[in-house]
Length: 200
Image (cartoon, rainbow, N blue to C red):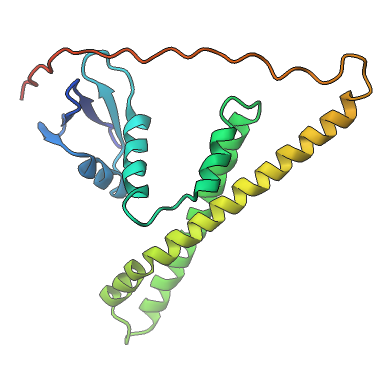
């Protein structure tokens, strides 16, 4: 049976309200929900617009500014360049698949480590857990390098595709298609309404 999605409401004053505990929570609390693998959804208290991705991005922004960033400036620039590109959707799926692959590798290594602990009575499971926690920065660095290499590989593939397209269409009288016009973006609507109190 699938776990019920936990509902969190965000009010105009930026406060987050957890309907499961009938209390206000912080971004740190939301981060803990992620770490605990609890399925949740953040919605605007008034419009019910899904804000989950926005909140998760805020958490990533705080983590990146905490002194141990996972993404280099170059990698972030490369990701930004894909927005509006014809390969944007493909890039997103490519990175997501690579993250899942990395997680599978990490999970297998952890399972193998736990198995070794069970085979060796001299090893304490608590000591092994502490050892895994100590490896956090190293694993984070490995993940960062893995993602950066994946993004670079995808960028190389994009450049190769563009080169092939130029070679293919270059001989035609109309030449290469134009880059297109810049699209306008709508500003997000904001509201100054005061948050209503949630009934508990």
